[in-house]
Length: 218
Length: 273
Image (tube, rainbow over all chains, first blue to last red; front, side):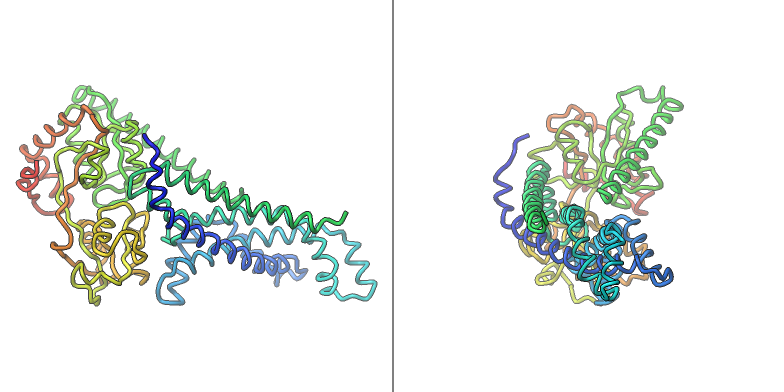
């Protein structure tokens, strides 16, 4: 079996286009997922059990079912329900964001709960409201502790975007598979994709490392 | 990591299924048919996702291709052991000689002949267009400018690419035809191009979906399916002889009628040899 560089070069423009879509999908899903995750995480730690229960339900469902299944359900069920037709990119962003939100909610919850009770008590006795304390005292401290697990989640999300090839979202893996099935080859497309994903996750870890160092207090 | 474990589980589960499947095969071969075929056991690979040619019924691979390969292998004096490995892996398994034969509605073409050996043709097929009943697509030409869903790596994809260009952004490539048809039903595509048997079978089984099949023999060529072997395989001779034998003794027609309900055109197939 010979390694055919020529087919990698032939598909390079498509792989590049796919990589750009992968980056776009990942960034938008990370942003939406983090925002939703924060709301859901805060929802889950509400004292009122009735109000908190939908958030518990959300996390259970999205963490308890495979992302692949969620992608199919959203692509063939949810998106056509609203727009009347399928849209792989929209379905991809929705599926990745909703799924990531469930994991990020737990990261936020754990981060917030790791902050000592005394912080809340101290701020409240200084006359701050519960919300003010959350925004100015608890969340900034919690966020610093949340960076490593959040970084993990972002990297998982970036790699999981490869699953979107099953609904023909033309991202990196989709073009990899197209290349493989055109020439009936496996090493060339999969190694090329693996290399690009590795490259993207390396950049992401680098950015996260820098962020962590900047927020260091000592 | 949490999400990865789902896949590990899925892989483990499917391995387990495959193992239990193998167990059953062995039971069959040791109990009844020992004296009938004491030939070598062949590892036959397929992609059981292509009804009515090969699909899963519970954990068993069934279909026209499976009955056909079983009959041919028996005729040639071998014990067949069919395993579903998925479409792309078929080619890897055969190229690396880990499997002996592949049967999966594989169209014989010159590009594939460079890397693999094929038996004499055993099935005639053409690509056809599946569209909603009210669609204005009347021929292959009308596909230009429309979004078309295909199964990736199939001759359906190749046929569409010939019409509107390779890697055209209007071609949506899916893992299998089920997903491509689902995309059509949810209006993500205007048409699906696939083998006639697949689209006709779908329309027959799902009359409530209001789909129809468009034929265009000028845009799509006749295709012949063949059994695929590793390059230089010694099995090819035996299997060619066996295929012709079951053409002659009526076994082929019997299996064909059982799955498609009509008589096969054996003469056209033989004329291709």
